[in-house]
Image (cartoon, rainbow over all chains, first blue to last red; front, side):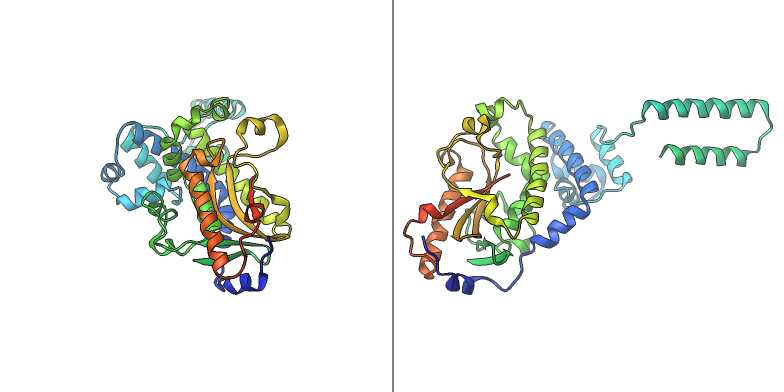
Length: 140
Length: 196
């Protein structure tokens, strides 16, 4: 088949496709978008299995059905609060923090160490709070 | 009907009008904004769908019986897994296209498998997977995408999704013929597909 390229080019729209902006957005936000996809999929399967409508889920969470739809399409960068509200509304777990064995050991060691310190020394409340914050930051 | 440049002068895609319900039907429109319907090209539309968990879950749940066919069954794959894998594959697909945008020819192969079955694919003859773009080759390294699909069955005729793609190819053939771009001779030799 021989094509007339000049006639073809004349049919091409001068308007650029929107694919590029979307592709860049997908690549740039891949990390959270992959998580949003996983969470959405889990929620979609759960509400299908339990015959829960998007409208009912929206009511339970006190948000609009449009917002739920955006979440289920993987387009929403959800806050932890939103994720927890979905978990609470559906009675399921969506995210968990997994500690490695080393971290778990460090946690236990830190707890014992802090406990020892508290039992053997007089220590101000402010110092304990600071220690706890440091520990939490290190684990995070 | 419009033609949108994707990687000009090598790759283009069709924009189907809003009233063409093979593309813009009630099953598909809810996944797009109102101002996108009838405005976005097939390349953009499929990557949107293939990255959408709601669309993918719905598609595979509606077609769960097809996942019992030998090709799918031996993967022993759940709806969650196939939806997730489709999204992962789409990302690889998109990356490969961007990286090869000046050598598009290398990504396409003749559409000679309208009757080729998945069993042959599993024998290592090809690394083909289930995501497809369908296109018309205009000249070397110059293609026009007419549509795409999640291919579920051996033959394109065996599933509505891929049957629709054959109809779209015919529709675009007529469109290009009417505008003097092609004369329609040997049209079947100009049909190509792209996959990862």
